Image 1 (cartoon, helix red, strand yellow):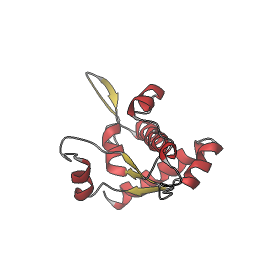
Image 2 (cartoon, rainbow, N blue to C red):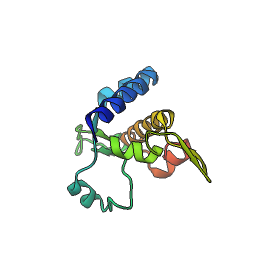
Image 3 (cartoon, helix red, strand yellow):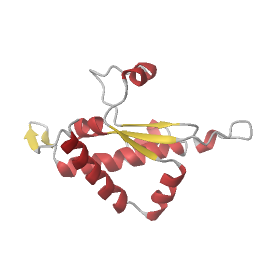
Image 4 (cartoon, rainbow, N blue to C red):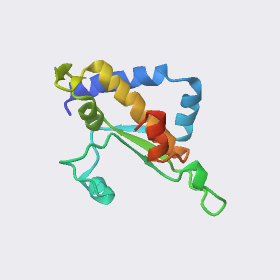
Length: 138
């Protein structure tokens, strides 16, 4: 990702975070968010993801709060947001339309950032993919 695209994305990311409720900001203090351009090849291989066929927008790493115990108090949770995955999932920087309807553009990227952040924070609280899908964050 070029520097100008990274800066543009990061500005949108900050705007999205600022628009989230205060309760979400407290969650981010518990489970910090790290922005990266893309996942490493090693990470994709570890997750069994083919980087040509699948898009990874974010990843929660750590132990969900619902799985912690005295024997397993791990508090090293982190959420990674992958800029390129989010932009790809949104349809790119330019707004366009095809037979399926409109895609891409800044507003779609902004919405994809919001969905990805809430999705990954949901994993921190023990929600699985079905739970997140039901909430509209899949």
